[in-house]
Image (cartoon, rainbow, N blue to C red):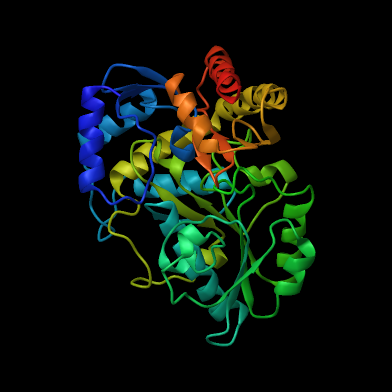
Length: 396
């Protein structure tokens, strides 16, 4: 570890809360799929800020959109409209095949907004008796870390010492349609599901699971809420991961890549009869839908409309899967879709990610035994192969 890295790491350790356990690298610059640390050493970014950097670091079109907006107006609050807001909502609704958008900032805020929406819809539209609404979620989920969200987490690190917890949630095994059907009743207002569970280790549900969720929600008049904050916007080779099984939810939750790696942007996207339940003053955010966020997100939407990035993710993702399946060493299982993979190993995944860092590749472990990969969708085939060679070396 170089002197400057050590100095900056010491400042972080001394003055920041220890709610993360980062790898000992201090990034100073970045471009595309590569970052450079304070000592001048380059690394291939195979994590993409957990899919927030789907378009790589400092994508020129996204930077230009941000610069243009910086010269005009950056914040108005929702007390006033601005000229980026309406077009952003229209374009995102169209991309998702929906009718209305409620913008927020972080992914957790989008999830919280969806939970409030489902309850309000349940009481005012479905007719659930007051105080009886329930929402069904799945074991292994990760939807954020607010008090309400960790109330239905099954991860003790996320949940421990934060009670008392918010009532009104039922948790069933991921991928188990029988358990879901048994949990849904007349008071169920929504089913919240990740089409692929990211934090759990890129866990892909069994074939037919998402269509089954759709059938159950339709039959019981409950909202199918798809958390596509990590899986959406090109990551899996389609615009939305739900598209792999031709499923249309009632509500998309989006974030991360929507801000282009420049600003935090999230949104709930749904039908008019769902998001139409809100009246002025009943929900909001000072920064949600701000001019900078909308300008950058509009350029993200424009990039996605070309289909180029979805196609790159599908093509390079197929190659990624073939290479991972042939990896040497202690690999027990490979789970991947598009440019997103979880590699289950015998042993400590942290040891592998630390070795990868030494070899010039940045990735991250999750749940002790899984190495996660999520390279930017702009990565070249040559760089991807270089990174995968380093992974093979680290595993050996």
